[in-house]
Figure 1 (tube, rainbow, N blue to C red):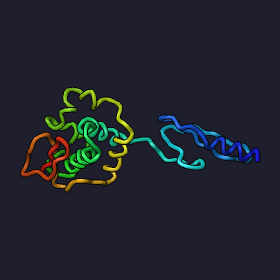
Figure 2 (figure 1 turned 135 degrees about the horizontal axis):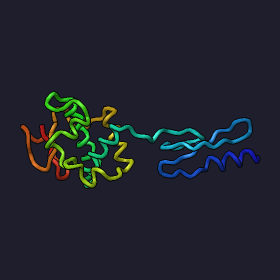
Figure 3 (figure 1 turned 60 degrees about the vertical axis):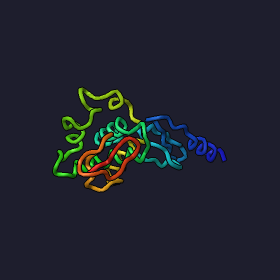
Length: 164
């Protein structure tokens, strides 16, 4: 019974941002291990919360361009970026597309305050999903702005026109 109470107590561990603890039971001695950027999901199991440089870069752009709207707009902004990476009309790297001269105002002159601020985890998760292949717009939609451009408008979300 005492061992059960110890284990239950260890499983009820508080999760703090960017700092989590994992417990394992070795030979009747519970061991608690500190894990950076991970989250306990059940009985000592955990998932990674660490983000790659590309995920952070895309999340920063999405946050700067669409955080005042909604998740549909955030996915669309990220999709346009990836459509550009995959298009022969734009640079073929994420960094090349995001920092291409004259394209994203939030990156001009060292970047906007929002582009350089801390990005919420949900936006990082959206960026991760997009980099893993999730798309919400057709591949020919390569323009996103507060005005119409290109050959036509595919969709308008909030203040943004998504054009091909």
